Structures are given as structure tokens and as C-alpha cells.
Image (cartoon, rainbow, N blue to C red; front, side, top):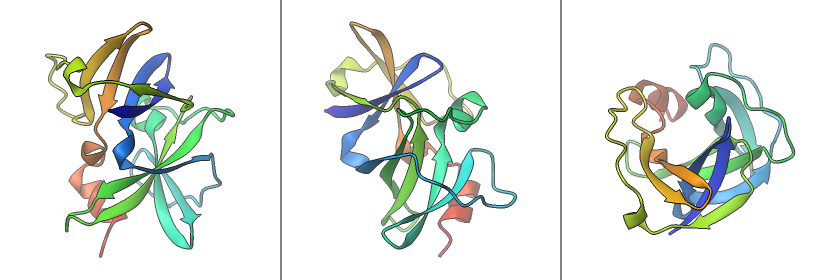
Length: 149
């Protein structure tokens, strides 16, 4: 499987490319008043307002660093009705891909309770890479606010 690899605080994470729509440079966002933590705002994507999640905020508790390598990764996020919805993910150092076999990933053995989106880990020559499971990124309450019908 092909993965887009990004880094946060020196740790590598992987997004399955089958879920990707497009990778863009960081775009300007319209802030959302009283948005849940991690929700960075909205942006216009081909005439459609799309919410953006700051992965640094969600995982590390701090806003993403504004670097040339920080990208807006647009993914298909599964809606409650099963229909995919575009969702922007702000990812630092999102500039490489990795070909990894699903069998290379192993469960961490650690309960992820509040972070079910942190999946199994794989090892390569540079160390560990943790699979970020996009479909588990948003808690139901946040998903319902962002993708209200």
C-alpha cells in the first residue's frame, strides 16, 4: 500500500493514499467561532466549504508550524450516511510517500482510549511509522457538527 508520510515533533505518521483526494500547499482558512479543539477552520475547495483539522493540534496540542512543507491534505471522510465528504488535514512535513505492506504494521499493545485514530506501527530503516486512521479521527460529536445535513 502507498502511504503519505508526515512528521510531527520528529515522529512519523502515515495516511493511506487511497483516501486522499489531493495534497495542496497550506491554504488560508476562515476561522470557526467556538470550534472544537483541532478544528482549524473552513476553506473553499472548488466552490465547496470544507472543514480543516490541524493534526498537530489534535495529536500534540499545538498548532501546526507554518513551513513550506506543511500541507493541506484533502481526504475522503466517511459520513454517517456512508457517503464520503471532503475533509482537509493540516499536516507538517507532508512531502514523502512510503510503500508499506499492511502486514508490516503491528498493534502497539497500548490502549488508545481518547486517540482511536492512532493505529498500528511499522518499522523501516528510519524507525517507526504510525498509521493514522482517518475514519476514526473525529469524535462523533465533532463529526456531527462539521457534517450536519
